Image (cartoon, rainbow, N blue to C red; front, side):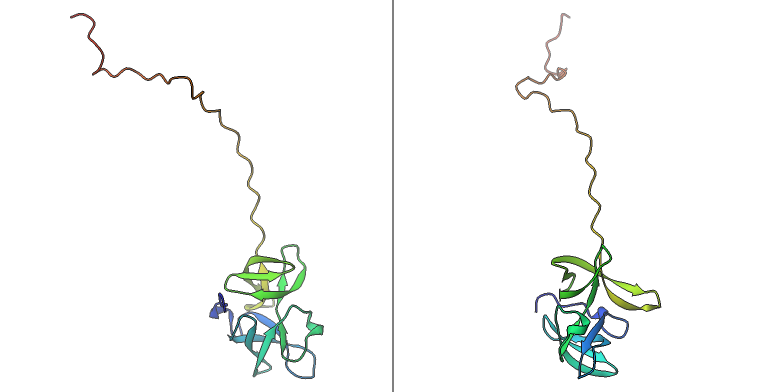
Length: 151
């Protein structure tokens, strides 16, 4: 299964999913347990179902499928292709993910939030070039090895 999703992201306060479990439209639910890389036990409307995570929009889900919405750094929301321990693949790229709390219900995770990319480091000023390696270094004379000058 690779790196499973941490169990702290499961349950009613965990990652929200959209799952199609019957003939009706997909409904909101949450992950109860991960059974394989793309297969999860989800709770929808108080009942548990086995559901396969797919990279489809909510309206395109077939019975037995679920999707997780991912908000990318540019603000667009796309379905996740895969979700592993610390990496989500969505929008054609894999990135480290963190959960984001929904403002309407502070304890509930609304979706997986892609972390913003790290700032580009600013170049540091260049340092002076190293001395010419062919030039012998001059060091102060060691007083123990010098010859006395007349005593």
